[in-house]
Length: 360
Image (cartoon, rainbow, N blue to C red; front, top):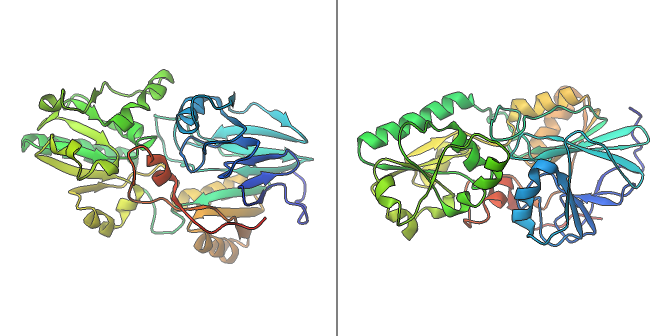
């Protein structure tokens, strides 16, 4: 890999988003552009109105859910190189949700990688994260603080299933809040379907077919509605977006116990503020140690940090590792612990909007 040119970065932040001039395309742009390369289907990364989209082939279905059925979307198999203008691009699994991909960009021997959102923990609901060597890595930092280190997922799923059994003994319905795209399907794959019936909110049901079509091991589910309430009430576990809390929809399943699956459940105050009975620490974003391992494995001599706790991570990289690190401005900052709309879990999963524009 060649030395980076400091005068003309291969990928730079603009008002539209990350831009590669040598290939004349944007990565996860938030304003309308002619050509968008999209890392995954959460709506803070896959935005409506672009002239053309390119994403990893397994993610086409969920990206289309976000940007509209008539959008021009092309897919590229993981690892397959494609020449665009003067650069070669390829997608590599990010382990965030179905079809999520890191984007590798190579130009004149120089390699950059944009991770998008990613996680390194095992997850049968999507493709496993793949380390990619590069000169410059642009990494997310949603949970870029040392306090965020995830427990083993197997232990979390054991806790969820036990909580479900305990609620069942008390005649309570278990309602587990999880973002409708990605987290909900990961949760479903970890449930013990022998315990009882599993229901899903409509926002989750809309996305499940894409996972089943991809062969991901989702259990049988029921739509959680008026027709199935008697079957689910007191026995079942229902997966729903957090926006369903305190709505008429949820009251039909009372009495119930409320849980939330999120990395933000690391902080107990988040559970108290939402009046939850249980919080389960389960994130589809990489934790602190995972970020550091990814950076080291990439071999990158330069690291751009975006989308979350950027400054603490930058200082740590500079002071503890002597790595050249810098902040990449984002319109979105971090992962919100709440959800505003049943249809926009992806926005909450990916981050809340940051209103400050970035400079050209």
